[in-house]
Image (cartoon, rainbow, N blue to C red; front, side):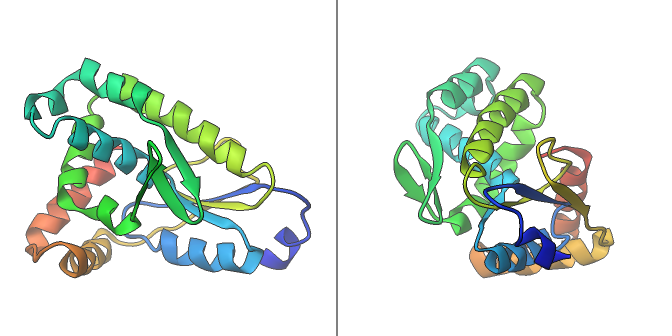
Length: 193
């Protein structure tokens, strides 16, 4: 129960695991509020690096598919979290921007490169562990987190997750057909991003 987590001194990590649009963020927001902690979407760390890649390749789109270019962007980009916002190289990024289709499409490219995913995980885990030194960090994630005090798994049928995703895309970006969103959700389910 949550009331016992409130008795833990110092920082710790609670990891909420589930596929896209399973309700992880809704639950994580409630737990983070209850514990006066930080809520982080691990997928947003991937999305931040995808955004950094898109910005770097703005006038050279061929770089978006190049392994060495991706690795270079990850190595050069400084990602951190302050005052409730992620930052890339000191520039704040609104979470809503991280949900646009251009970033989702770049995530599908990143998924093809184990080296890229490993680099992002290493840098992301270091950030998470640093944040959790003093304060509870509530993660939403696609898989278990090794340093978590608790890993919780949410399971929601794919049709419902696709409806949630479609509603979300309509709110922030543009109208997308249900079948297209369903295909996107299924592709994301095949990967780990």
